[in-house]
Structure formats: C-alpha cells, structure tokens
Amino acid sequence: MKLYWDSCVLLAYLKGEAERLSKIEPILDDAHDGKIEIVTSTISITEVAYVKDAALPASDAELDKKIEEFWHSVPVRLVEFFDLIAQDAAQLVRNANRRSFRLRPMDAIHLATAQRMGVDEFNTYEAPAKRKKWAGLTGLLVQEPDPRQPQLPMIPDANGPAQPPAQPLISPQP
Image (cartoon, rainbow, N blue to C red; front, side):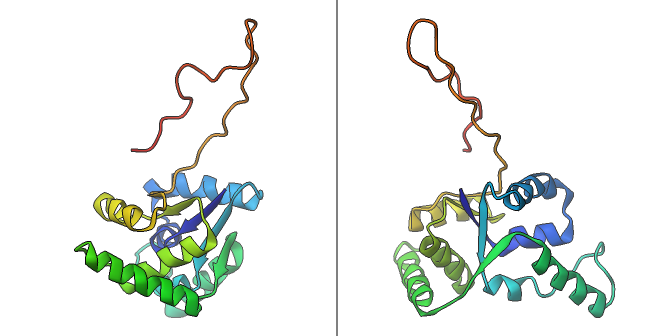
C-alpha cells in the first residue's frame, strides 16, 4: 500500500499532537517494516520548516536540528517537484475553479504529486468538506491517517469453499 502524506500530517507528528500520534505512529512503524510506503512532495520540507509549538525546543538552532533529524529518521520518501507535476497542479486549480471552489496552489501540488505517484490514499487533516471536494476532483481516497489491522485469511467452511465473514472485520471509513 502506498500512502501520500500532506504536510499537516507531518506537522502533527513533529508537534507531538497526542490525539493524532496514536494513528500516525503505527503507520510509521509499518513503513519502517516495509509493509507500506509513505510519500510526500519535497515542498513539505518548506511547509514544516517552522513549527510553532510550546512542546518543541525554544531556540531556532534547536528547532532546526530537530526538523533536520526528523527528515533523516522518518520512512517518508520525498518526491521532487518538477514541471509535469506543476502542469498537473495548475490543471487541478483550474478544474476546482470550474467546480466553484478554490484550491490553493500548495494543496494542488500535493494532490498532483499523489496522482503522479499512484497512491492508494491521500492522508490529510484538512476539514471533511475539503477532503470530499479533493476526492471528487482527483478520484483519490482522501482521508485522515488510519492504521488498519490486516485482514484475516478466509477459513474454509466444512460445507464448501472459503467464505468471507458475515460482517466486516473492520468498519469502513465514512
């Protein structure tokens, strides 16, 4: 599975937002174990360059060091921003305008990068209404990060071939 992380997911991790870390950390563990791949645009480096939060180091030098260490420690593949992604992003902005909503250029770059990379999900903490618009615009599954438990294999029934469980093991995301 390949996930795209919007910069707000990375910021939540850097800030140590407790309510979000419980979902982010298991995904990072799966990425460290090679079970999933996480990608983001190189523009995320700029978007997380300055994190204002009381829990982070007070001095600029300490904060710079923490952010630099972050990029070397997380299993997130950086995707270069290049002309084809720029053209795709510009088209997304125009298409959003035709649908009567504003798509910010940085968001368009993230979405276009995710499309180019063929991700299975685009993870963000943007508002649900915005996520729905982005999904409609791009055809991507756009949702908050959600660590999933692996599906159990089907067990053959004594009366015939393997059957899926009567009820889903995992509730689908709304």
